[in-house]
Image (cartoon, rainbow, N blue to C red; front, side):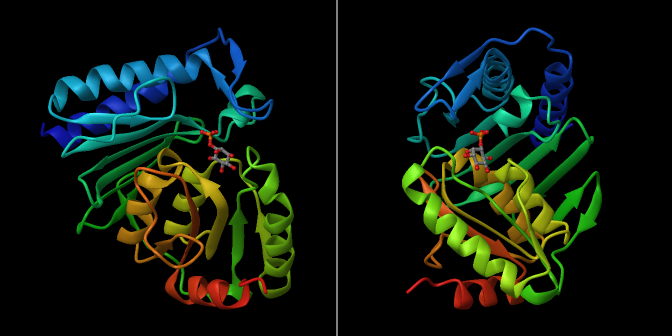
Length: 255
Ligand code: LIP
């Protein structure tokens, strides 16, 4: 079994362990909306230990605690539980998101939702898969697409603009959706369930794996200005199939 396949097993095992965790302590980070649980920390510690043993040269750029070293030639960008608020409230819509990147791009990404047992993955140049079956973005225009979006709840100053864009999206699309997990939102674009996704501010661990999966599924992922998202700092995200992404970028530019 090669390193990639062993990594897949580690992510799957992390998901199984997460579902078996029945004790949970919840803490607030930057804001009462910005939560971290003992399960986030335990899952991250497991992933760092196991992936670190497999890739001893890699550094780790993770959401929780001090494992935020993006200095290596190769690094893991990890969100141990993307959709932490969903996890706390038993919403069953959270995912483990693991990306392996070099200094400029993501080489492979895995997003696992243990509740639905949906395992999304992609390796650069090798296509995107859901539970081993190939996936591809839809060919729908924005008008014929569901559009998911994130509310960037930790950034109060972005709330007005977020809902102004969401209201405009309602005019030009089938409808909007808000899952609470950026990683899964991106995977739904890759699987063709949604034609586009936007969120005005995220951290790299929210989108690094999903970014690779969408691109390998034939989609486009940029920041809100149309540039490549940053892998070592915060960024807005605009993703979609090429048609819907272009229409989104054209129609959503606020004056
Ligand atoms: C969450 C994202 C979500 C975003 C939240 C939060 P977390 O990740 O997946 O889309 O709206 O602000 O960033 O913090 O639960 O790992």
